[in-house]
Image 1 (cartoon, one colour):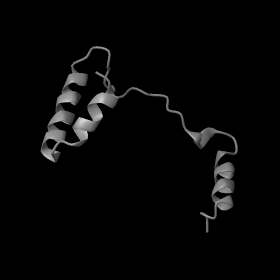
Image 2 (tube, rainbow, N blue to C red):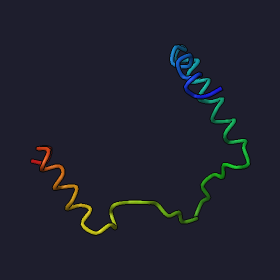
Image 3 (cartoon, one colour):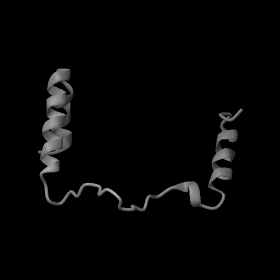
Image 4 (cartoon, rainbow, N blue to C red):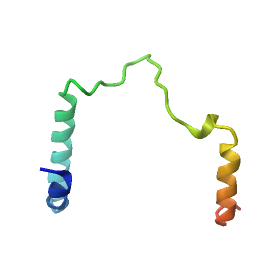
Amino acid sequence: MTLSEILPSALLLPAVDKLRLIRYLAVDIDNEDSVAPLEHGRTYALQSPQFEDRAAQMLLGVLEGEGIHN
């Protein structure tokens, strides 16, 4: 079964059953060997525009162009 086949039925579930489904899937994923949890004290590389040249200036330009920035 695919997600697109299951999702419409899952959305019809009452809230309590949606939470049960979330818990069940979380436990199922946690038990898989292919999913490694984050390790305490380890450093992980994250993608961020913070260190990209001119990212803040480009974002500000977009926001000003759309009238979002004051």
